[in-house]
Length: 328
Image (cartoon, rainbow, N blue to C red; front, side, top):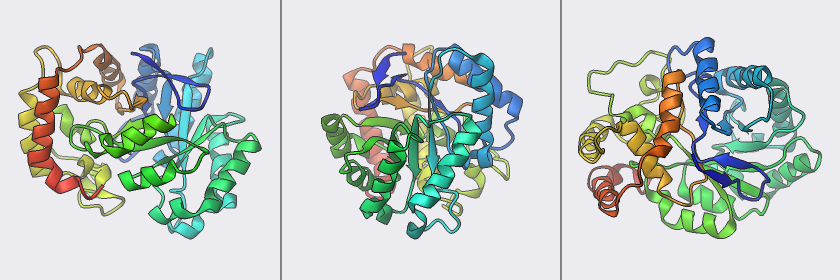
């Protein structure tokens, strides 16, 4: 794995990190033991970036991370968490400094640290990004030492472009994968220009780009790929990257033809993301140690050829873009 500087913060991170949503919840049955094993395997493989959120398992993910890091000792990886989704209802007016400080204090306790490396607004309503007082509040919390830096996790490219207008924003987390290619247009150009760290999430389109999902695949009742298929619980773009399952499966079969011999489709999909120099770190999740090690190994795949990159763009434009490109 390569090392990248993290925007304006003094951290250096591996280009593949650990996405900790799966060890928190909403992915079916992932035991705490499996979650610890997955995180330990990722750290053993050299990953130096962990992404979590206060709502992943109502704090379970943050607490598992704290347990594992305390048990390992030594130099700590960069840990990014998120705040805002604890609001109920999740509305613009809830994004006050007092509420955010309360969420941050809870994460500080869960992660057992005195200052958060990075806190990200967790896919806030678009209007939040037009309220300067929200970012002024984050500046104050940074000056108070509760956070080292802050960023925004977004659903839409337009939200990313708006967020980076604020000088204090150091990072953007955005969905970017073979099935969600729009960020590599204007947004990546602006992120490079402003030295914004880019965290690529949902890299495997909720498992679609692993090539292991079929029309017969059954998902547990508490797996978002079951209960959020049409956006019932949160933005539908978080589930299968917003691609209707039938269209996604058709596109997967065409992508499969491009995967080099000896490589998995998941590794190919991660390597595709790493082809962009605008991406600081990609954060695939892992349900167990085997998946975590496989994610790390994707960095060792040879760079993809211009012809292969062009073929993935053609598949996207023909089969996927009509469903997602203008929506997000």
